Length: 171
Figure (cartoon, one colour):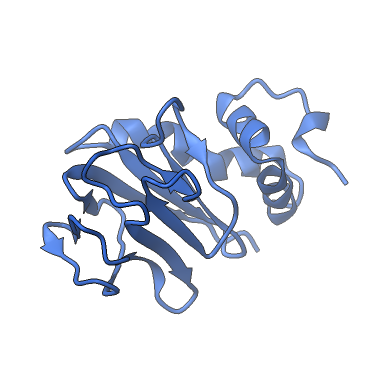
């Protein structure tokens, strides 16, 4: 099997994925028929996300290839960008066991869940947080879900971040 280690790649976005999540890079290569330029096109939004921010400098970027979905974010302390594992749901909260751990005093241990469903797309659900979850200034009730769209503003407690979405149909 070919993986990104076998290519001499200087592109920082490919290195980020390879270093943080080798299984993701291998899956992306498979999804892209082992064409590194296609993988680069899928990962490119990770580099552009900071420039897309309009309200805050923090973001969560979802990338879906149709077969696999992952998130990247800059809200994790000590990381320029964190790339999550391929999954269908990602927990967000103060707990270090969350997929996206956030050190912020108004964020609960397990504050919210971002989920992916092929029929609904990506959505966020408040997990009974103390200080609430908002999408575009609409507060979610505990366990209520809200479909996420590209450019949505998410607020966890008093922490705001922008949500970006890129979907690629690979085959």
